[in-house]
Image (tube, rainbow, N blue to C red):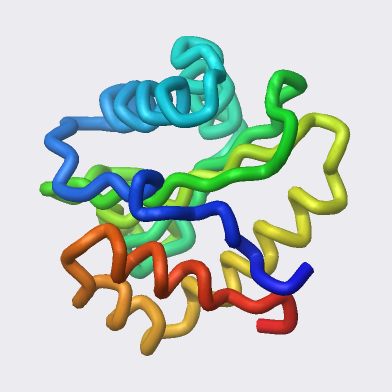
Amino acid sequence: MSTVFPLLSADDVLLDLKVAGRSGLFAEIAQNIETRYGLPHALVAEKLSAREKLGSTGLGHGVAIPHARLTEASRPFAVFARTQFPIAFDAPDSKPVSDFMVLIVPNDSPELHLQLLSRLAGKFNDRVFRERLRAATDPVTIATLLSLMKGGE
């Protein structure tokens, strides 16, 4: 795999979302996924919420990686969302989250799912990368930054 997210485009970047909590966030993201990928928004929001009930996907440093495996997904894809105001997300550092990298992977790809999560966690734990991402204010720049995630990084 040459890049982690070759399919993340500017259309997969949602900025300045005005949501008050997780359910609103997941509803907005799920609506985008339905529009872009044809998966039912209610199903996506339900799966993301169900995964979050197992334990927070917050990494700390204002970042979370909500994720789900869906039988209905034919391939992995991602959506990056930034909220206008941070959301309490039970992150390990107790700080609210405003940057969300949502990952959807086919149900029959558990190894790929774990590989992608590991690479994402490593990248988002890099302070310099987080600062560059937060400084980016347009979808094209953000999609470009995220597309630079090589398989070996």
